[in-house]
Length: 85
Image: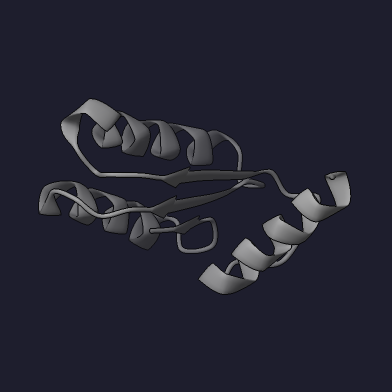
């Protein structure tokens, strides 16, 4: 199970264009981009996290309200080495 998890992580990293590295922590969100899911809180947390810790990858997948899609894209633009949205 642990090996399968590592392979899934590597596949996701490759699929979204992040460096493939089993040692780098990877945080993923997959869901609707609506107020109740807190995407605005998530983007604020991403910025805070990546300003302190550069050795982490974040993948955000989902659709919903355009304002939240733009927020996630802006996080990717600000942190192109760490975030995919």
